[in-house]
Amino acid sequence: MRIAIAADHHGLALKARLITRLTAQGHEVDDRGAHADGETVDYPPLCADVCGRVVDGHADRAIVVGGSGMGELIACNKIRGIRAGLCHDLFTTEISRAHNDANVIVIGAKVLGPELADEIVDLWLNTRFKGGPHQQRLDQIAMLERGESLT
Image (cartoon, rainbow, N blue to C red):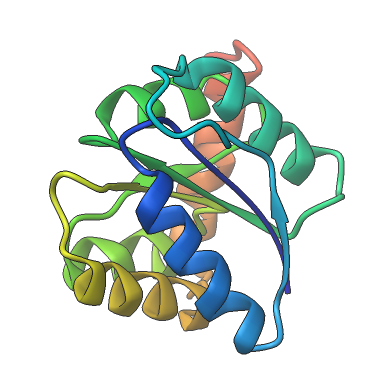
């Protein structure tokens, strides 16, 4: 799988760990930044970049690592065609893929230990979208994204 990955200054160590693991698993990982340790980095440009890679087809999915992940989640979901899920546990991770077909995962380096982050990313990459009634809801979300009414 082709995975774009980015992290702000809070997530650099976890990003490096994930890149090593994902590459060893055979994934093609595109590190989109940040790279400077000790320097504060704004996350919205990083989110726009990795999400753009997914939307334009250069990546199958993306991973964004922040401090809490909350701001990154908001930024990612502003990009048309992105369904980002904030995953701090295995339940929300599975739901983000199985029900919401999330194409971006956002995780918080200040929230998760590295072992749990590994488990969450593995689960997210290996969970299939269930379709069915969940597809109908995604279609409705896409309508909202285009500014269409649901009534």
